[in-house]
Image (cartoon, rainbow, N blue to C red):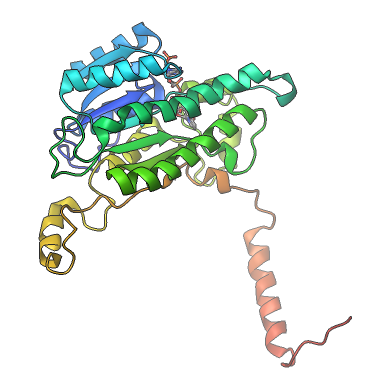
Length: 325
Ligand SMILES: NC(=O)c1ccc[n+]([C@@H]2O[C@H](COP(=O)([O-])OP(=O)(O)OC[C@H]3O[C@@H](n4cnc5c(N)ncnc54)[C@H](OP(=O)(O)O)[C@@H]3O)[C@@H](O)[C@H]2O)c1
């Protein structure tokens, strides 16, 4: 595994709660936030998955606790957020990674199946945000009023940027997640100093997402058509989460931010803390996969053609083009 490019203490003292933090991408984000100094609470429906994730985190020295809960149930969401606060005394980072997925042609999907995925991915994300608000906001429970508000990271996808076969329910749900990200970034950024961002993973190896969609078998063929000729790793998504959760990505980075802000203080009084300027964006971490299209000309043919076209246009008479109509 590649070493993290970030300093190990950049999240020191922060507390993160992750839905779906017991497995796959969510677990890797838990691990990396923890390795960078955060204490970790994870939430999921299967107790044994949550318990084993907590033991793994503790085994590498990360303070961790797990809670059984279903993001579709408001009582569970409230209980888990409150228990996290009671255990660690604060909440700084909420990561919504819980999601449901299965392949199904649209005509075979029931309204209930569609609704279930919307309930987990979209409504669940919104419910968790609502319950976490009183802890995440600037001056919220457990927070020093002079420090910034917390941050929310919603795990989305790229399926809905175009259209994806047999993924109508997930595409709709993730489109809603991206809207939630933008709207909360606007409202809660303004009113509560909470930064809300998303991460949209492309195909990530060794995850339930890949195996449930039957993509692992065709991965090598698919890779040939991808811009970077590979699927992503969970680590890639976790590093994006560390970046967004940290004070980096701001106009001024923390390491020297105080200095820069102090020199501006006479001009801009309201800058009481540095950095933290990334808000309302969904960071695509897919190796360019959603942009990829088959190359329709060999590169040499294009070079040859453009030389000919260029030469022709240089010798063409100048003037106003005549309309043929
Ligand atoms: N893998 C990929 O290539 C890929 C690509 C794009 C986006 N993503 C996104 O990345 C995230 C993680 O995906 P993954 O592939 O790593 O799959 P995963 O391991 O199955 O992660 C999903 C997690 O969500 C939890 N969960 C599901 N429903 C829940 C509910 N109602 N309440 C609470 N927790 C719930 C699951 O635990 P329980 O079942 O125990 O509750 C599980 O830990 C998802 O948001 C997914 O859409 C993945």
